[in-house]
Length: 86
Image (cartoon, rainbow, N blue to C red):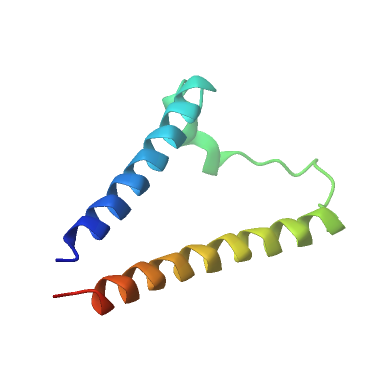
């Protein structure tokens, strides 16, 4: 059966999600819930325009690479489970 591979895959994803949630909780991401309701109403016209730097391009490429790696791992798990099914 190929179920143990998918269960392991789900547990790893759940563990990573839990770690991300605990990190956000520790850093105070959820401390001011009422502020988020008023963010779309703020007018911040005094800030200067954002200039694109090289770091942002590298960050986008890194995120794309991480997404492709995740899809590749998903495809490998699926292929492995289908090839070794009894």
